[in-house]
Length: 69
Image 1 (cartoon, helix red, strand yellow):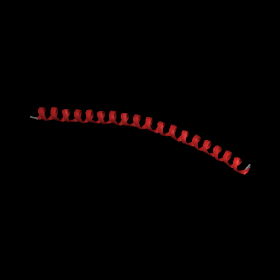
Image 2 (tube, rainbow, N blue to C red):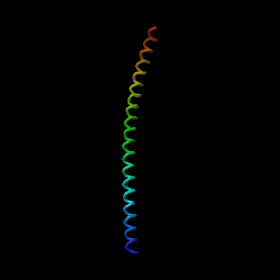
Image 3 (tube, rainbow, N blue to C red):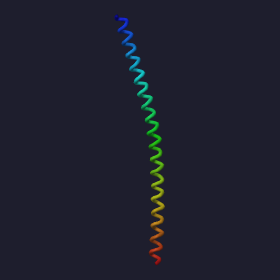
Image 4 (cartoon, rainbow, N blue to C red):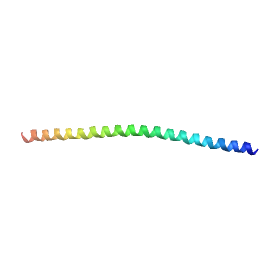
């Protein structure tokens, strides 16, 4: 009976280790995906910032045209 309990305890311990390994693997996969999304968001932010500069330049040109009238 004691031998069976020791084997059951070992099996339970091994199952816990396997579950922890799977959780760690899933966590790393999510972390990689979040990093990709964050990089994409930074790219969008950079494009929006450069678009804002272009809008300002157009506004400056409109001011020049209006002042010249």
